[in-house]
Length: 73
Image (cartoon, rainbow, N blue to C red):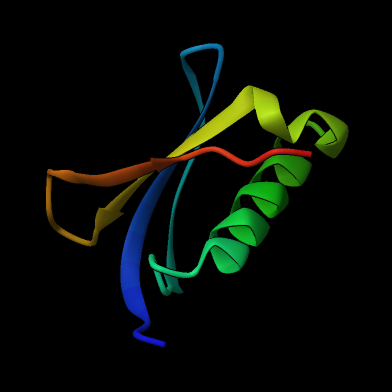
């Protein structure tokens, strides 16, 4: 597992609802899912619609998006 400092942007219906930095392995979907879940919980508490959100993942200090992560229920 290669942990990196990541900058994450969570969106819902195209709107930014959260931006934060976290240490995680971008190749480990379970860890990204947990970060997305926790961000949604902090935003509105409704984690039962996780599939409606997406999370842009960047290496800290870099502009290019590594991926856009989407989870299913």
